[in-house]
Length: 115
Image 1 (spheres, rainbow, N blue to C red):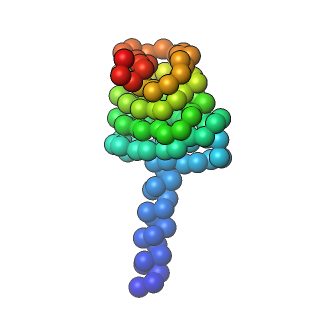
Image 2: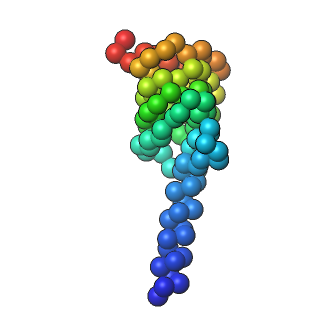
Image 3: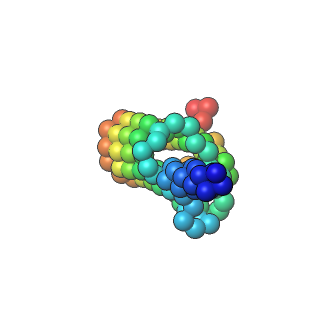
């Protein structure tokens, strides 16, 4: 029984890492096959990369850059320095600052929250 429990805990831990991994203190990656709602905390210099479709992400703190390599992603951020769109139908709303926006795709928007 303890081995079964240990195996279940390990499987849950690995699947959680596939959805969001911190490869370093300055990088947050969202990858894998699961969409849905997620949250993360940025600090000065944090780069966020999103590789899975249909995700709703809330970012607190000052993010350096947000890169979206997916479709139908919605990001709500306190602050972001730069945004790169590499997919379609994505939206990033931010509360402060004026980020630079690059990339291609169709139907992508970067908007200041409340405006």
